[in-house]
Amino acid sequence: MAGEILIRAARDDDADAIAGTWLAAFRETYVFPPAHPDAEVREWVRTSLLPSTDTWVADIDGAVVGFLSLRDASVEQLYVRQPWTGGVIGARLLTLAKERRPDGLELWTFQVNVGARRFYERHGFAVAEMTDGAANQERQPDVRYVWTAGRGPLPRDAIIGG
Image (cartoon, rainbow, N blue to C red; front, side, top):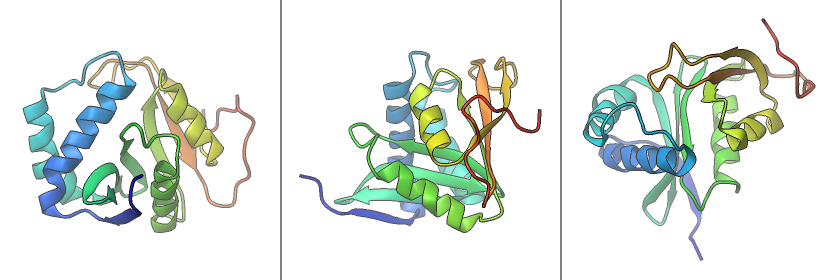
């Protein structure tokens, strides 16, 4: 049985574990490959993501099993490794994001990520925009979600702002 889940601010020395979590979770979720090789992802986490975002990790017994990165009102990254998806880790990280950005949030996910889409919709996010993926590095159709504090859940098929 796993130990207690600790949600804590990321440290510089978490960069490799965060990159490993990102790579593993991406491959566990999608049939298409990441747009960049592993070494570039690790470098990006260390030199770009951590210095420029408010990043938090979910730590179980010293192992990073999920993380959240915020930039302004955007959830830049939210990844949780299997077998911890579908539990409380993602919800705790998303609650932290809402606490840190109480005026609202936005995020992007790929349209094929049905699990993530259900998760965000359950947590009050609504579809704001759907694209063909031409603007993302993976060239996969994506969807932008928004959350505004105090707004009740919208119908599943609602598209706001568009």
